[in-house]
Image (cartoon, rainbow, N blue to C red; front, side, top):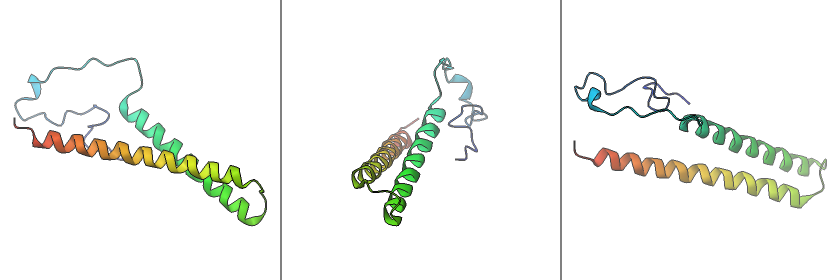
Amino acid sequence: MADPLGFISGQANPLQGLGRANALPKQPQGDGPSFKDTLLKNIAEANDLQQQATRAVEDLQTGQRNDVEGVILATQKADNAFRMLQQLRNRMMEAYDEVKQMRV
């Protein structure tokens, strides 16, 4: 996931040079993980769940696995993780659209 402008990591100030960049208050950094780290971790977990579900389906098809319930459970976990990330993306896009609508 590329972050060319530094919006997620906060390392670069994209508003610098616009005259009002110095007027923005500095946010104190917390001790917890950043939003970017949390998001990337959740994306990696969803990817792992998808790979496990794919492996489970392949094992069921080749006869290496007999528990259909476990395969269904793995695919449901992967589907739920994907839907959660999709909803997060939708909410982020809605918030971005609201910010774009703001008058400055």
